[in-house]
Structures are given as C-alpha cells and as structure tokens.
Length: 358
Ligand code: UDP
Image (cartoon, rainbow, N blue to C red; front, top):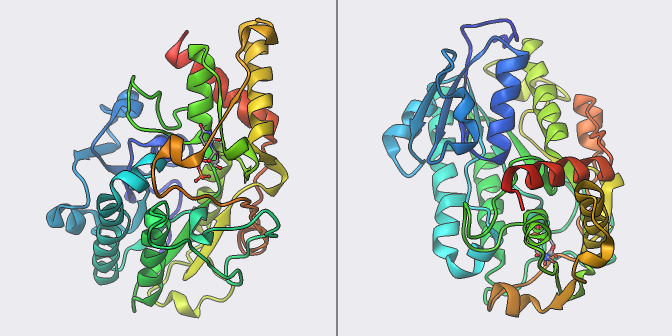
C-alpha cells in the first residue's frame, strides 16, 4: 500500500489527538499532506482551531471502550499517543496508570493485528528504567533494563509501557513501530498546575509555572539528574520520516520481508546534544525568563532543593541519566533531531508565558 501525501483517500487515526504531541501532529498532517484525520481524545482544548476542519472527524472517547478500539483499527495508519503520563500519578494511582499504559494499548494492538493497520505506538524513554549517573548511551536493542523494587511505584508507568512493547513485539501479523520519546518539550506541553490540570506535571511545565508565578523552582534531590530535551517539532519530523516509508510503498502485508525497514522496530527519538542537568536547566530557564520579561535576575527567587519523596510522595525514584543513542533512526530513516537546547527552551517558555500570562 502507498501512503502518498497527496492522496486524500487516506485517513490516519490519532489516539490522543488533543494532547501535547497530538495537537502538533494534527497540524503537521493537515498542513503537509492531503490526508484526513480521525482524532480520538477526551480533551480538545489544544485543537479548537481544527474542530470544524472538513478533513477531520473527532470522537470524545478513550481506549477503555471496545467499540472505539475496533473503529480506530479500521484506518490504515494508527498513531497511539494516549497515556497517563503525569509523574505524580505514577505513585498515587498506579493501577490506573497501568490500565492506561498496558491494558488499553494492548487491546488496540490486538485490533490492529486483526485489521492489518500499521500501529505507530508511543512508548517512553522511561523503559530504560533506573539508569545511573554513569550510564552511557541507551541503545534500543542492547541496553539492559533495570527497575527499582515494587515498592518504588514510580516504575508503574515504565513497566506498563515496557510490557506493552513486549506484547506488541510478540503479536503475529501486526505491522508496528514503537517510538521512545526522550523528554519532548515545546508549546502546549503539559499544563499549569491549578489552572488547567492537577498534580505535578513534567519538569519544564513545572519550572515555567514557577517562573510565571514568581515562585522558586524546585530541584528534586538537588537537580543532579540529567535529561536530553527534544523539540516536539523534531519529533513530528521523525514521524514524517516514518510516513515517508509509507509514501515509498513499503507498507506491504508482509513487512517482515522488507529489509532495513522501520517495521518491528523500537526507535529512540531524542537529542543527545541537548543533555543537561536539571539544576543547569533551572539556571538556563531563569536566564531566558529574564530576557523574555525584561526583568533582572534578582527579581527571580533562587531555586530550592526538595527531596523526591517530599515532592512527589512515597515510592518516588529516579533515572539519573537518559542519553539516547540515535543511530538507528539515522541509519534506517535518515532522521536526526536538529533543534538546539537554547532554541527549544526559549520557544517553550515564550509560549508558556504568552499562554498563561503573569
Ligand atoms: N524535577 C525537578 N523539579 C520539578 C520536576 C522534576 O527537579 O519541578 C526532576 C525530576 O526529579 C527528574 C527530572 O526533573 O529528575 C525530570 O523529571 P520529569 O518529571 O520532567 O520527567 P522524567 O524525565 O523523569 O520522566
């Protein structure tokens, strides 16, 4: 089958279409292709401007509904972005987090295996588990995976995501590609606690919220952990590199026979050049905030150190370093994330300040 970008008979299903990645993917598909979109989500506030687009059909639903799952799997390409991915919920609501990140995507994978759809499933870089400060590059098919004890319920999310990957990989007849995002950031990421969401979002949204509110940035356990932040726009380009394979007519009924293809593969999608400690990130974001707002550094409170358990609750644990190997995406898809850290952070914070005001 060919998925030509100018073929208006193609419909892509996006599960989690109203989320942070989904809203950017929707915009990109509508701008760069003639495809139609079937979008499923529970919340549509990020995509208000698309609700009346004649190339889109939206459904308020989630994957807990079997009929919805069957309906989604009728489309030839299914991108599954739906997940509970708010860190504070990993401790407080582990069973719900596991249902959302294992039961629901496994049911979707079964339905896609039956219908023959190509499932592009979003997993997480957290499946690399409790990495240490001296962990090197994380390589998709080589790195050993180690998690904390069951009492460290932080790993509820990662283990559910990992089990889903294993389930997908074990299904006969499923055309699949797994994406492991490494700290995607950009406009519309997460939420501002107490305004349009509750609990503790991921670090960039937390730091941005604190800056807008004039509160101290919180450095969990001193902020010595490292992350590699990746522009969501690079992530969308990765998906288009994948879709290009469809353009080339490589999505056959027997993808196993297509050599060096992106099928039956998990890909790290990240930017190793953007690695930074969380304490350095706090410093950079304070600096960028002074430039955006035209205020002096003295007017911004100093960061505060908090313990992980105090901040997130019992069962918190951390990965100390998450550095992606990106060779596979480069080799198979000729894709490499391009956006430097300073550009990513400025773009994200400028959006956040403009959106939530101060
Ligand atoms: N973190 C922090 N302050 C915050 C939020 C997070 O110091 O307000 C730390 C967190 O402990 C972790 C890192 O920042 O070491 C990244 O956390 P995040 O929740 O963004 O996602 P993760 O990469 O751990 O999945």
